[in-house]
View 1 (cartoon, rainbow, N blue to C red):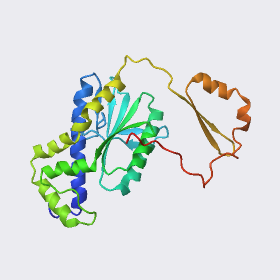
View 2: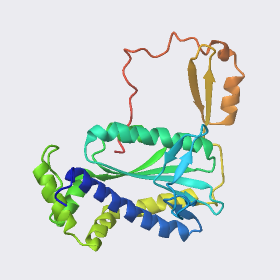
View 3: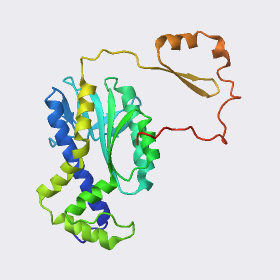
View 4: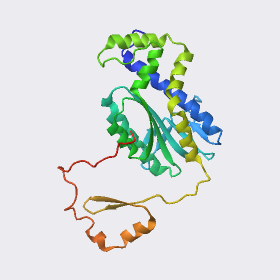
Amino acid sequence: MNDTQNPGSALGEAIGTSLEIALNSYLTELVEGLGYHFLSRSPQTNRAGINKKLLLYDKFGTAYNIDSVIANESMQPIILIESKYIRYKKHNRDKGSWLCTAHPAIRRRYESIRSSIAVLAGNWSSSSLTMIKSFDINVFLIPFSRICDLLDEFGIDFNWGEKDRESAVASWHTYNLLSNKQKADIGERLIEEIRAVLKTLVISILDESLERNIDKVMIELHSNLGEVKAREFSSIDDAISYLNTDELGYVFITSDAATLFDPPPVVDESDE
């Protein structure tokens, strides 16, 4: 295994895979006991009889490879689930932005989807977490320090510098000396601290006894010049009242629009 071109990435990928396997196993047992399906591969197969990637599409036919989904008996998706591991914060924007693009696009096509869940492991910045949460994605964080502490129990140094190839090679070698059970245990122990809260959330999302009500109403107005204005209301009555006012004649007057010099919105990050 020492001839691996990038041992650091290989070890990170192995940890991410162990995490995903443990998460999938746990959720499969949980939701199938409730009469739902847990899918991490497409229910369709190719000519060789192998399940295809789990692809969900937006309204324009763009395919997104989703980690897993919880579906009802009719195979309508109910919950989208992703598990993402990153070692360096420089990758936050790429993987975080993908979540914020893919999940909302998919949800606009599959109207049965109630929620999105992202299990994020590694070095995720507070700004990236805030961005992801702003798209109504439930986030479960497994900090990088937790991963380092756990691997240290197996004699694996995981807290090396980005250019420290020697330590990465040694850690990758040590990891490959572990038994399959030990590797599986790493994934199981990574999800230990989120398991109970995750279970509570999933069960609450799947609860069919809850009465459906309108939670909010979004109105998006487009001018013939290309300007866009979005408004959010807490009730249908408030939205109708807005649409029936004379304000709409002036809605695209942009004298009070944000400028390039305005400070960014204040975001509450107290829950992180």
